[in-house]
Amino acid sequence: MAQDLYQHPDYYLLDELLTDEHKLIRDSVRAYVKKEISPIIEDYAQRAEFPKQIIKGLGEQGCFGPFVPHKYGGPGLDYISYGIMMQELERGDSGIRSTASVQGSLVMYPILTYGSEEQKMKYLPKLATGELMGCFGLTEPDHGSNPAGMLSNYTDAGDHVILNGSKMWISNAPFADIAVVWARNPEGKIKGLIVERGMEGFSTPETHGKWSLRASATGELVFDNVKVPKENILPNVEGLKGPLGCLSSARFGIAWGALGCAMDCYDTALRYSQQRIQFGKPIGGFQLTQKKLAEMITEITKGQLLVWRLGVLRSEGRATPEQISMAKRNSCQTAITIAREARQILGGMGITGEYSIMRHMMNLESVITYEGTHDIHLLITGQDVTGFNAFK
Image 1 (cartoon, rainbow, N blue to C red):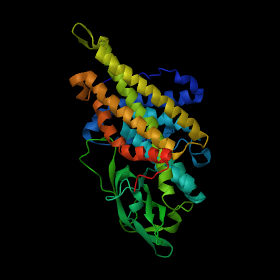
Image 2: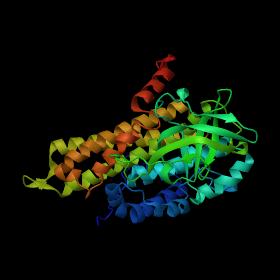
Image 3: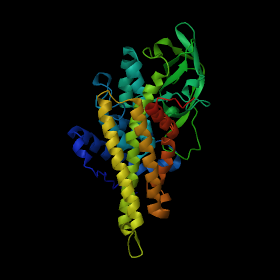
């Protein structure tokens, strides 16, 4: 079993921008990943299975909704702390970070932000510990980048509503206890509903055959005349601003998390380049290898500065969705480029499970697509700077 020798790259001494609490949180989650995730993750990825036994530990680390106040069972941390946690988890594996991101940003965040006091007290404390696990239902088979086209809907039936429709590419779906689902009400307006496992007509078939996020459980949500009590409808939001607000929270976590992949790939390639001997010396002594490594650490450093500033703005309530969008796209592009370059440094060894690089590379093909594709985020930035909508 390979030992996790990861060392965090900090070329611009960014640790000096973090508080002692930030560093304590980072060190705790990093130690957890090294002990509980790294030794098992290659095996679970090869088997395309999610390691459910880690859920309790993720809850104990505070990785589920770190920003949720103490009143509702959360740690009540700032958004830099949340970002740091996601970075450390994704350094281990994107699928593990996805599980935490979905739980925190796509399930707990909408309940906290849009839910009633009763909903918050009922669900958030158990979601924070992992006693309950959740998923987020927005994407539909025919409506990915255009969620406004969703067909899922519900009709009024007295003290409850009847929900019909389907969602796909849903992380955590196969084992989730609840789903925050977005559907049209009888007036055609988009609303959020909390659907619980066990409700008749609600099923979550698993998605198989993935080459990416293999250690994450992915599935569909199918609603066939599901009776949902009206008290399960999120009362404080209507329209696309509801799910899009959740996506901003999730994209923030990805902006930090994807850099974790980049840093792990860089660290692996750097160590390998210092040990691998070819033509009588370490390959790190050759110009082309140094070029790759120098470009990697430069892009990582730029990304670190970007997400740190974004974390400050988010904690102050000033980060815009467009700023978050830019950081998500940049981190994903940085990470996938670094993964590919790192794989080349390792040569043939780079495709084996002995090293994390190929797993990261495959995972990042999903990360660069979900929560808004690379091209969609470019258009979000383009619209923000020009004032012109290029989506239609």
